[in-house]
Length: 549
Image 1 (tube, helix red, strand yellow):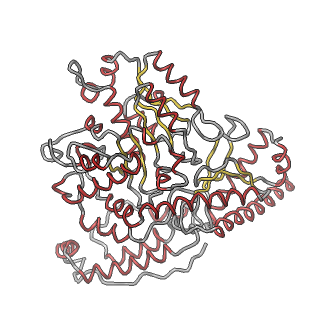
Image 2 (tube, helix red, strand yellow):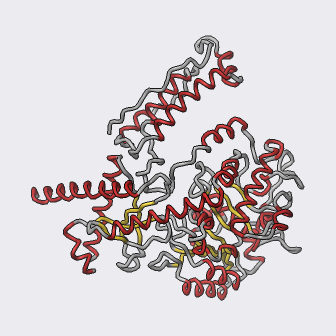
């Protein structure tokens, strides 16, 4: 795809001759230069606006063809002119990047951002605060704790006196800011493991003695984490890092609504207790990444409470439903969770690299506390004492800004509109024989597939064979691939085993994520019409191949 774009404005970034006066040149890069910075900002602004205004989702250049521009591993001996590097960045990197902010890019959990986060991102870099320690992030430590307190109140809704006591108390941790949902989930389960296998007067605890010694002391045969078969793959990472291994992650089947089977969960918990197996945590999902399904959180909470087990909710995607009066009821039971993961860079519409885990008990994170003589000292307010990550930027500045500049009612609009437009897309699919809806959407993720003409009547009668479904799977894989390569619109794909075709039968699904506030009903229709046109051409091509053979 050829796209008309304007070259960024040229500018001279330094008065020094890079080739002869490197020392002076390098020093100039670190000095405060209003003129040069403004010149670069102007060019970056032009590039950004050009990139953000695009409606197409990508150029048609494939990864293979682009690779040749990124194979040189030689570090330049002398500094490049910044103007020269900026032109490379524009023409080679930005020009061929995916337009995740396009209203027709509706296939992944990455969307458009509110305008205010872009200048705030510059402020974060300019201040360069390291929130591992108050000595490198004085006010932004307090600022982050306030933002976490606001999110904690959204989830748990405790009294005003509770937040007055704990929000800025050095000994309390209402939440931990992380680089994303994966780190948040790992942090939550780390807290759970260290708590259930903690220290006593006779034992130093799992933190110091290790998992094998802890299991032996507490007379457990092994340890497990239990959740749905649709758990995010970050739980595989957690099981690995916490020492219980992949076999310690018990995945309970999900039903046709993509919810964990409660009876099987109850039986599994009872069996673990009977066999003397330590349950580190039971996991509930509030918005599966594949389909947006929401587990029955209230029932899982009751099961976890009866078993005296940590209850963690992965609400990385669906947590913001709490802002909506209409949809918050879908998360009933989340306030009983010991820990909750929410991703800021998903439906809070904040930049990538911002997640969090919220903790019901403000003292739970003490079980993962670490100290150092030069930082994270005892009694300090250093946030690095109780977090998986050490040095990190003050990304919570964007979270605080979003909560204040969008507010509860603003986020409610975003949530409600996303769900409404997803239902619009579902209804549109149901009215077109070319498509098959694979599951009723619970929020704003939609699974469906294209049905080639030869299989539509059989699908309507429910008489598709496994061979038929395999062929349809292959067709949808090709359709999604071609749509992505053309770059006008974008839908992702996944594999689901919880459809009306029966458990265990793998169905390739086209996956829409309607999270971009700028996506209109017309954009949704264009995406589907694009798929119909590509599919027709693909069917004709396949018929020609069959005729030729």
